[in-house]
Length: 488
Image 1 (cartoon, one colour):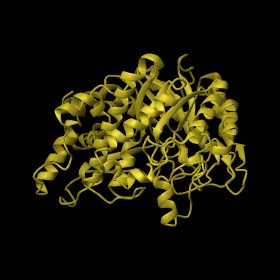
Image 2 (tube, helix red, strand yellow; image 1 turned 45 degrees about the vertical axis):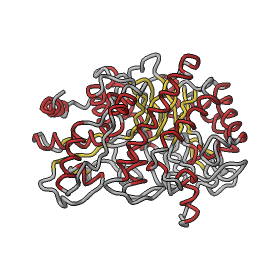
Image 3 (cartoon, one colour; image 1 turned 30 degrees about the horizontal axis):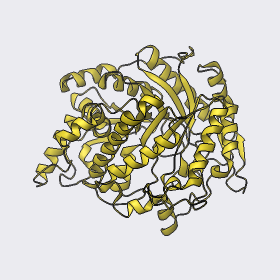
Image 4 (cartoon, helix red, strand yellow; image 1 turned 120 degrees about the horizontal axis):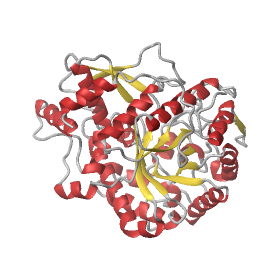
């Protein structure tokens, strides 16, 4: 699709009518689930041979107010977690493996058998209760020894991750059908290696985020090829990757604003997903990065190119796309570059984005409730990537009220976002196979226990980490049972 056609397509799609609540049943093979991740729920940060990861290191050495040392204590309470899943009636549970719990040094020369047994026990408990595991291999928790060697900035990371992924396939692949290599590469790279907002807190704006991204997608391809050549024939599973993406809506029907919205999308999908589909970054991203780099006096683009061999190796290495989606922004073209010399992901995109004050506000500044953005994004994915298989791997609503069990706003969020997913399937023909709500329970939201996404409340002041069902859990239980968006 040429760029003019893209702009016309977006302009037409902007006029998509927001429909009434779609209460038709989802397709018979559609799956419902919930998600968590290892560092956010497990605790037991140094028990039974587990090694230190970058979140352990940063939260301990920089004196953060909150750590993941105990979290929800799921390392000891995983059977309670599965009982909650059983109560909800979900088809699948998305969780992640702790690299440091399995490999304390990050390398496969030392396997921690206690960690292996923990995940085998969890998977068995899930399967015994009719719940399919959807397993994320890396959800932000790099082993600290590997970070000390450069982490994603070390080209050897591709081999390190390949070895780790192969071990996971060997240990758990007979019971796991769907794998996710990385969670949210944009957050990992931009916020970890660009603006230094999350561990490993490396300030590398303009270079670090792109170096990280290149090695990350190559590492995904390495894991995919290992699975494809060594495990697929026997285990008959699939390997995907998770990208988080907002929907970017043009704030007018002007050509330049429609173009700005497309550029914003390409700086998400064109960096991390397109290389795994056809072997290279989006041309929009490449051209913009080359232009900015040249203007700034560099001899070559700050976005390092892939070799021909790498392009061939990466192409076609996604069995499905995992989508994390929460909110929407309005996007417009910048009238002028505020600082042409500035480097970094947000400067390189060259757009301005905002959320109107009258959009409903969730428990975090970024989280505005915009259900129609879900449908538009799904339709864009279909049109851009030739209707790939999509698993919605995260979608949810945060609040920051203590002990809020009557969480009607979360119910409203789930209801309306799911309705738009149903519209995308029925009306737009998008190939959405599953929906995963974030999250099963309140957990460690990357620096805080005050932000709540859970269907179950967790009392973090109790040594038992007591779980209590919220009103939203009862609602989601009805959705799963009826396979449709229901009124309360």
